[in-house]
Image 1 (cartoon, rainbow, N blue to C red):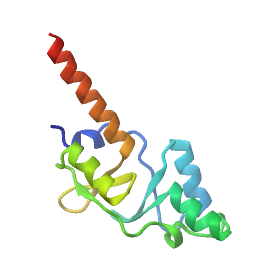
Image 2: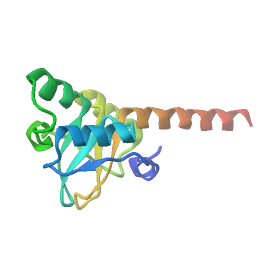
Image 3: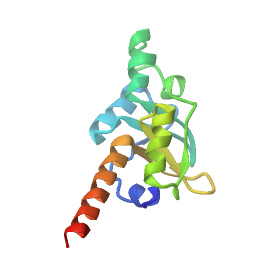
Image 4: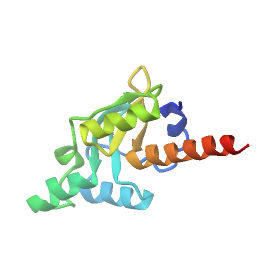
Length: 138
């Protein structure tokens, strides 16, 4: 079984913003990286996550100005996190149980290693099945 640590190292699309970033700036950063979430960082500390759902539910539905509102005012604060040594399958179960699409992965000291999406986990499981099937053929 694979650990999340192996996936975090593969990521090339991690986006970080400061809490003072505007919704527009954070949204542009997410769009340019083609991701649905950005980690909101205060120094090396994970302050929250800002997601596409936050844009829809907390900004657009409330007619807030994307150029005026800071990410810190509309980000998700109640974050489920995990450690880098968690098994990929267990992480997927954790995400399903909490109805989340993004999972921050932390080192033991709380340092953010990256944010994995449910897609990252599913694609890795597909690759693992392919590797297993290839071994069965030989």
